[in-house]
Amino acid sequence: RNIWAKKKKFFPLNTVGGRIQKLRHEMNLSRPDLYNSVYKNETSEFLSDSSKEKTVYNWESGKTELNYYTLCTLCKTLQCSSDYLLGLEECSNKNAQFIYHETGLSEDQQKNAGNFKNTTRWKRNDCNTR
Image (cartoon, rainbow, N blue to C red; front, top):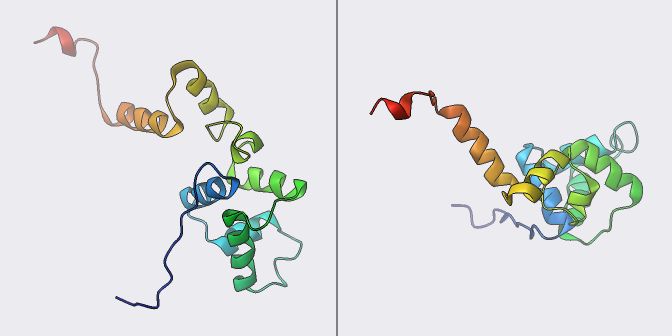
């Protein structure tokens, strides 16, 4: 085991940065990849990957506040609502938020229910044959 290896830090999900980090991980994006997606055709070709890494780390850690443009572009890139990133909603999209309000199921619980439904083959008469 490398004692010099960087330890991954996870930020709280009740923060803007923690939510950015969670969604970035779910999309399997590195910090430089996320930076490039947010700032396509702008500054991304002039900065080193370590600078991009540091910028996104600063968003995730809360050291840097997002401006309006960055917030909007992050929401498009991460496919979430600004209300979710800002902590005003519990779910990352409006459909999941509606289901949460109606049922109390978190977004993760909704995904698990969808996975369960897709992996089981229930037939209408299964209950009557026993």
